[in-house]
Amino acid sequence: MSHLAWRTQIAMLWLLQVINLLAIIFITYFETGLIAGETPESSGPLLAGYFFLFALLIWLPFGVRPAIGRWVHVVFGGLIVLLKASYVVQSLGGANSGAFVFNEIWGLAAAAWLVWVAWSLPKAA
Image (tube, rainbow, N blue to C red; front, side, top):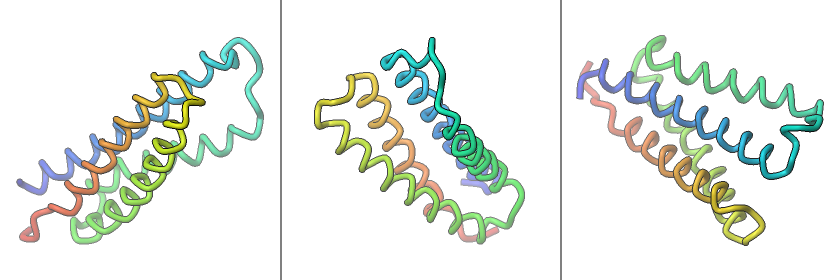
């Protein structure tokens, strides 16, 4: 795989994580009725930071050398895998809807794939 193809694939996989978060937000808002009511003010800075981190990770494969980017993606991707795995285990307890569980499972699969692609970066530049 060429470095450009690798960078594009990594960026798209991080974009999948953003889409996954948006799906979680909308599922939660629709199922709890928050979409029609007020949202907690404390969620704003957290969401802004979360989206900034993912925007940075989407840009990163194009902005830094692959040797540096590989480890950043493996580390952050691994953290997302652990986070998503814990959400999947928690959501299987039955308190969440099928849509939420399905969303967490595909988010976990995308994060695991991201780590695999980052780890598989060709070593020759």
